[in-house]
Length: 526
Image (tube, rainbow, N blue to C red; front, side, top):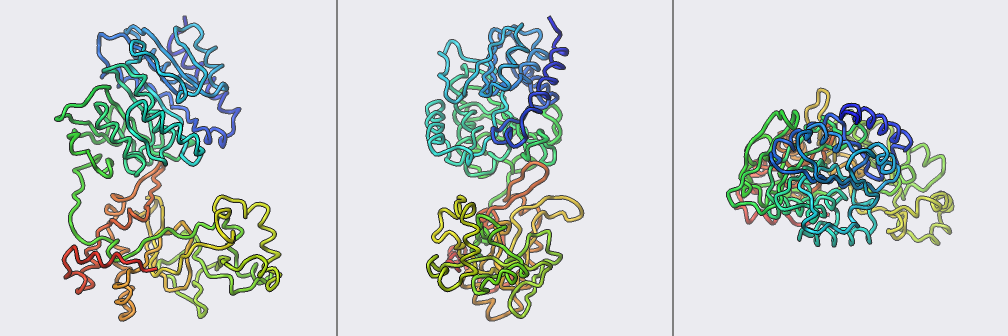
């Protein structure tokens, strides 16, 4: 029989060949990201360290591919009896060739959808589950599929997954019914579950239904999958009820076997934590009382048009098509086109930037446009075949009307990278123009009390912008989330939770208010 090394060489060649026959887009849609062999080996090496020394292995990989984990199992468990090994693979493109590769081994490869298969009887369950589940985001799952998956997850582990949960969350929970008592599981999954709202049920499962052993999070710039922009973690747990005094190892950076940072944290301290990532590199962030940006601003995402190429036009094209200017308003270009963080306005209120753009926003019914504005009607007709049927446009009435997003005096970039000389991936803009912004920005609208103060003192705006621009990077990153390649993102609620003591100090009357009285700042401004 071939050695484990020889088989791994053949498996890698097979993997490369099979991947080359599929487009990157197709593999992304199915969430197919092959585990690098070095990482697979390291995961099984760690599994060997925590697996009972005298137990026989009953191995399961619910998303088998060509068998990277099984190959690593053979290398690291060579002296351990393997009583059963099962790989489940949905895609015959990988499953059938894998059967040929492993035909001389006591490995069963089942072709099917793991989330639809009936779990085994208790006596046939598995004590070692290692998996890199498909990374399929929720918007690639239709409504009926989400209902089915949520029901299956709840039936398997007693936890109801969120509607926005990706397929990998359901894989992890459904596998609970396949695990033997005291069995070990290692899951290679996106790190985002630790920080996003839809990850809360996953965290409840890990902290209450099983004994969470360890979470290792790779650094955001260290992509484990070259064709997936996602930061990864490895989650280890044992199937039994955790003791009250249980501790969890949290590690970060480096490798699974040699992390940069590793610390033990009481599982009780993790209960109810909004973000687990704050525990990774240091002490838990203290949620001190005090003013937040939400006390001074109503924060909204910028406009999602449905089709920027159709709705956002340069001045020259609007004039060449003789489109009526009353249905266009200025809009900020993307962050990379802004050389300054202070946006001045021309006499018409448009931003003084290179390549001015304007967004089409009309609420008149089609029959009125056809009669009164024939040039605009002709342009809208060009968008009907494709643009009007897009997800956003098809849900608007009329389909060419935009959301209500007035110009905001303060704007923050929605995402960015911590690269080059600029350490802060986010930029705050002082917008002196009448330009609105697209959804690559967050718009900060002053609440009524702050708006009144700005009207009384026009110089106050620059002072507030300078405070926003000087918010410590750590404060922003601590509220936001990070993806692979060092891509950071801030949602409106996350930015709203950033401390704003300096703004309160700039406004003496506001700063003097007791915490509960400052709730008046939460009134809607738009």
